[in-house]
Length: 114
Image (cartoon, rainbow, N blue to C red; front, side, top):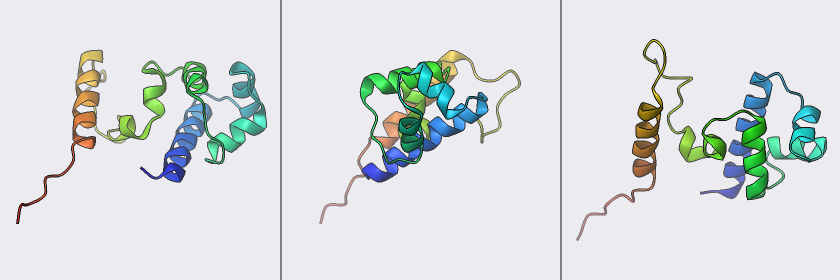
């Protein structure tokens, strides 16, 4: 995966979730013990995120799936863009979808033998 795309996508997810929760960058920064400038740089993909920071961000952004929700592979199927059954998906159904998407994304295509 292209690193620039990875960090840009991560930043976009953080910004979108932060905005959805009505948090500004300074509030989020305070919750995760970072500067507002760091949050701004992360959101545009200019700053890398350490693993422990990813967990702190996920917690501050109230993501029940933890940092997994911020990673591109977990975003392959978004419940925001697909029609959902009334009442949403069960935890088991969400887990099954994540497993399916992960197995598809990590499978290398077979090449034809010559």
